[in-house]
Length: 176
Ligand code: ADP
Image (tube, rainbow, N blue to C red):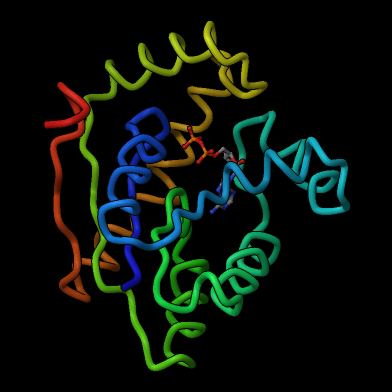
């Protein structure tokens, strides 16, 4: 089963993705976490990605598509994956469709987490104080929200055409 969580920064992709992946028995793959790990480890990918992440911009499609391709080709991704934070552009969505088609598979479900924009900013600023992520400052947060509206929101229509979108209320209690 291939499931994606599509949502703005701060909406709880990581939190809800963890719960959903565990209940489905498939691995959770967060491109954001993988990229941050690459930055920390100082790999060539990390070195290329760092500037984009810190500015709140998307890392180039080729780099993240390669990351996902490796996971989908690995033993752990063979029975399904929950992707959190990927795809984020139509080009990424088209690339993953092609990779899955090569495995006689497809995107089964896309969960669209909906959270009010005001609450997103509040949550991200609260997380900045707690976790100290280099991109959780007001300037980068606003840039990430702009990028979401411009580059990622068009994916909603893309997946609605495939009939796989479910809208989920992302505010309120985590368990609910
Ligand atoms: P958030 O949704 O709060 O921004 P993420 O961990 O999902 O957190 O992403 C953090 C950053 O990592 C993004 O701003 C971007 O620079 C990079 N990134 C993560 N996933 C992708 C992706 N699929 N394509 C391009 N860049 C990505």
